[in-house]
Image (cartoon, rainbow, N blue to C red; front, side, top):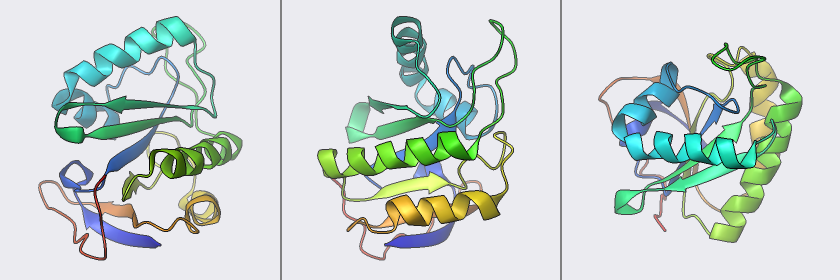
Amino acid sequence: MIHEVSGDILLSKAAAIAHGIAPNDDFHQGLALSLRERWPAMYKDFRHYCHQAHPKPGTLWTWGGPGHVRIVNLFTQDGAPTHGGKPGRASTANVNHCLRELHRLVETEKFGSLALPRLATGIGGLDWELVEPLIRQHLGALKIPVFVYSRFESGKAADESSGAKSK
């Protein structure tokens, strides 16, 4: 059940928020920066995870924080070619793999709802016309509300009243 909404994804009441990043991302732009500012411990844990696991594009990493917040970091972009370099662009192959893994995670963890932005279309550089069908293919059959934040409105909570349940 996919629902397009407008608002600030950081104000979402969804059980999990998913977003796209690159391996070893510095979280200095876009939604990643907002998440880093709101939950600095997530970024610290992310850096530790990347140093230990050396994640590959097309995979994901989940972080759980205070108040039952769950952030699902989808490695939609290629990593930077050098330490401290600019991450690569997202690819539809990486997005496809990430969404398949996200579907499995939602079912395994039994999330009651999920929120995500227009994945990989900002800093990732992909066209929404390529990404939206992948989201519908992989997440459309989930029996939970999936809120796609199609337009950002700072400080405004989206209307997620269409059946959102938290875990």
